[in-house]
Each structure stands twice: as C-alpha cells, then as structure tokens.
Image 1 (tube, rainbow, N blue to C red):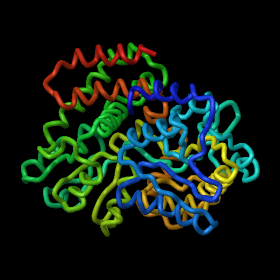
Image 2 (image 1 turned 135 degrees about the vertical axis):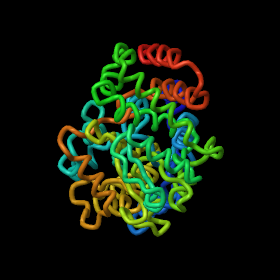
Image 3 (image 1 turned 90 degrees about the vertical axis):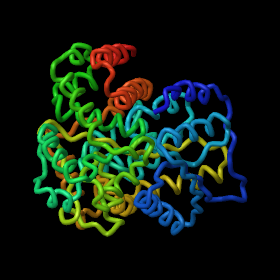
Image 4 (image 1 turned 180 degrees about the vertical axis):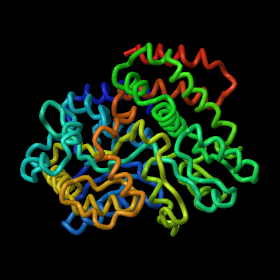
Length: 413
C-alpha cells in the first residue's frame, strides 16, 4: 500500500465539484478500474463484464497491475475530476476517507431494494458500511495464509504435507537436497509482507497477532513469540531462488505448477492459476494452512462507486452495482479465482477441494481473523510493509533493530 494514500485522498476530498467522464450519448457505459490481471483473475472479472453486457451495459475495462497502483490510479482519477464508474479496493478502512469526503455514491437505495442485509454475512455487511450507509460491494472473500505445494515434488523427496511452520523446514531441506526450489517467492513488497503476517499468526500465535493488529500492543512486539516469528520469517530466505526479487505472484505459482518448486505462500486466489493450468486440487497440488489452529486470515476485495454528476452515467453505474451484487454473478466470479461465494443465494454446489476447505475454515466459529490490511489503516500497513520488505531483502540485519522499528511504527497512529 502506498503510504501517501491519505494525502491522495485528502486532495480528492478538497474538490468541490465532480466532472462526469461520460457524455450523454454514452448511456450505460461504465469504466471499471481493477487489479485482476492474471489469467484466472481476468476470467473472474470477465464474468462481471459479461453479465453487465447481458443487461444492456457497456463495460470499459481498465486493468492496472498491482493493487497499490490500481488504487492510486483510481484516487488520482477521482481527484482529477474524471472518476470511473467503479474501482476495486481491499476490504477494510481504505474507502472511509473517500466516503467521509462525500466522494462515493451511497448505496442504501440499492441495498434495501435487494436485501443486502440478509444476503451478506453480518461482519461483511458491517465492513461495507460507514455510519449505516453502504459504500462498497464486497466481492472476493479470500484466505490470506494458504500454503500451496506440488504433490509430485513432495512425493519425489519422500515428504508428507507439513502441519506447522516448524515442520516445514525439514521438508524444505529435503527439497533443497534434491536440487529443486524449496520455497518459491513472489518478490514484491506486498507478498513479502503477506508472508510475514502468515508466519506471525501461525508461528508467533494468535494472541500476539491479535494484540498487534487489533490492539497495537507495543509489549506484544517485545515478546519471545514475536521474536520467534521474525526469526522464522528470516529463516525462509535461505530457501528461495535467485529469480525471486521482483517476480509476479502468478509467475511464482507457475514454478509450483510445473514442479520446479515445492511450496509457495499465497492467498486463495492462487487456486485459479493452478486450475486454469489443468491442475487438480489434492491430486496435482495441495493446499493447506500451517498451524491452522492459530487462525485463518480473511481478507477480500470490494468495489466502490464514485459519485457521478451526469444522470446517464449515474444510471449506468446503478445498473453496474446491481449486476456486481447479484449472488448468481458473484458465484460465477468466485468460480474462477478461488474466492468463497459468500453472498447468500450463491451456488456453492460445485466447490473444489481447496475452495471447500476455505469455505469451511472461513465459517468455523472462532477460527477466522482479519488480515492486517483489514484491521489496520493503509498508512500503518504501508509503514510496516516497508519495514518487513527491508528485513526480507537484508536478512543479516539486526533483528533487535527491526523489532524496535516495528514497535515504533505500530505506536505512530
């Protein structure tokens, strides 16, 4: 997440008028900015485009690689007076300042007419609202701390699926001895951070994780559990390959798909890449969560809808919102990328083994926890992401210094 998010949002809020990006003759045309750019993600977003076209709309696709880049593009467009009809953000507080500044379309009229309160799980309905008004449409409910692995590689080295981060290292050593990549890494800041939080939850423990993400507890960063998790995170750097820095997550997934690597840590959206390559879950590849008893990190994608002053553009946007919140369309979207079809009324009859696990764990009482991006502001999450990335890319640096800087950042808000 860019740390200048608040500044960009504040600049947008300073606007006193909205310019419509559409002419009257472009009725029912709607531009959508999103960051779903891999093969499986493109297929998923394509279901929204198809459904919108079937209802008489014209979908204008503006895909931007990388969540931070896409969100910055959307904010800049809003600030510049040429807002899109919709933009994808992450579940959590990212939309709040835009809504408080009056830049987003309130959607209670559509929500009430289509019974969103009954169709959405209570926690997601609450996360989509501010002061009782819906401002976003939850779209992709994902697990963040999944581990994906090649069944063939584990069979080759004579290893079973590990159940914990501590057990993982014994398997990684076997893979390394066999000359394959033990741990394929998507070498970008966001994925380095995601790995850190997965390790912290599983290896450091649920109590420390929640004290940090939910309570900003400085003492938790000084605990032996936090230090252990940091050291486990650093230990993983010895099992990656030289091509990791800068590598995209879907290219990383391909290393596991083609049995060049054993493991990768990625959210449930990775399932779409495996399936689109013809891989079968629990046959060609495995999916699990290490130290599952500590928690299942939930995050998700949402779409927000900037205010549009032109009546025709606003009407097209209304049709877009109704389309993208339709449970049947949501289920088709989820079928491609591994997210859970959570809207009540969505078809769950054909979930594969990995999505079934995700659905079970997401709804198991007391297991799910909010991901750090949901629990923390974009500014704080960005600051911690920078610290984690610096540590990952300089693994011989001082753990003590990292812990001190992490604590200081945690207390900065």
